[in-house]
Image 1 (tube, rainbow, N blue to C red):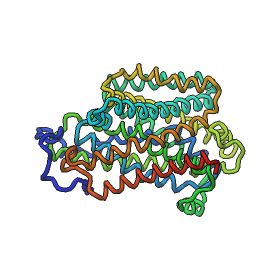
Image 2 (image 1 turned 60 degrees about the vertical axis):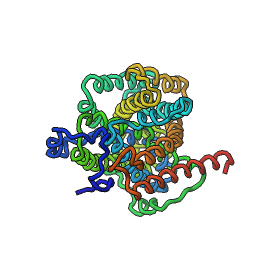
Image 3 (image 1 turned 90 degrees about the horizontal axis):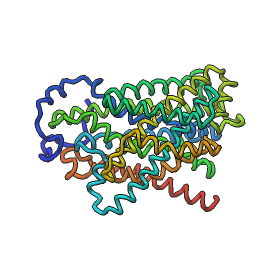
Length: 431
């Protein structure tokens, strides 16, 4: 059985939202694992958004197997990060933004923190709406602006499900889209298998120039999503609001490890498949550094069926991830500013930047890649507080991280910050 990294079971904080005894403990202890899964699968959709597709496809088409190691390393780090986020929500009964909103005493500091978190949420929305618009253009020939509007409207319908039917129904909708995404983005690998030697060589960390560093930052920004860190704690909080008691909490944490493992296994496999497909079938083919070019090249190289399945996966990716992104953005605003804006109203407002870019004719793939770079700069602002808070006994009590968990989280944060610093130096020096 998997053990939690919390230490002994004898030191539960009496004031913890999960510390009180409850008749539900017996029910929790006997619950099937399958019933306890879900929040990580929803949060995991953020790791399969159109920004991931653009970054991984571009990396494979331009550099072959060079950046395989970035995808693998990002997925390993993502497992730890998402588990810590979920643990924070389960043990405290509050989300990461809510805790930060209480602990950041100075209003100016809290508002500035919210501004960067909101910019991250807007960059996420940008990628997801553009991805859905490109997919509708590829499938039905719709103008990008019209596709962006349709993607936004459908996401409103999905958010209505979350608002009116609750987290379980919302999970089912997102997981159904997740299955479509997985099929859409992995089918091509079975038709055009990657070179085993190339994959192994790609596991060796290295770069080839400034552009490869930019793509690495883009891949990490798309893999380790700041809004997913904020959202997962809220998803876990909403999913298990009344479950209390030490036995119940430990059961949930045990199930959460499986939940995160399954979600990250799916996300990692799909992301790697996208890069490997581009490396094996599209490397050196002109125009494949755009989604439209990749779609055309797939149709020519592997057949229209594979290209259509890819576009369907892209559409499902945009629809699912934009819904989760809107949920995360609303939670960020509520937790940090103590303002609750209806999800649908927020959805309408956050659509505007993406629609403006689509209407202006800006290259959608380039916008996707750059949005992921913005996300990579938002990672430390979410990750460092998460690692610090989960290491505080005054917050998590007996569920506080073990020392090696905190060290691993700190190393992840240090590596991500270092990569962003290198990226800035290379860009501004023109190296």
